[in-house]
Length: 101
Image 1 (cartoon, rainbow, N blue to C red):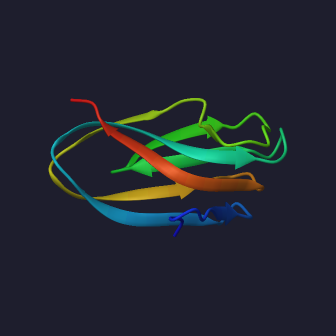
Image 2: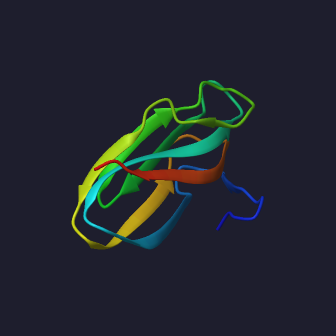
C-alpha cells in the first residue's frame, strides 16, 4: 500500500487497492487524493463499507482530491475500504476519511 511518501499506480480496469479499517459508528465522508494523466482516462472509484463513490480527476497532472466525495453511514466495527477504477492512468496517493457525525 501507499504510505510514507509512496503512491499506488492503478494501471488497468482490474487494478485496485483495499484494506480493512476499524471505525466507530457514525457518518463518514471519504475521497481519494490522486493524479490523472489523461482527460479521458482518469475516473477513480472508492468504496467504504459498500458505499461507492466515483470521481473524475479532469486530466490534471497534479495531486487533487476527487471532484466529489462519498458519504457512508456505518455501524461500529471493521469495514472494507477499496480504491479502484474503470479507466487507466491514475496515481493514488491517499484516502481522506473524516467522521462527520
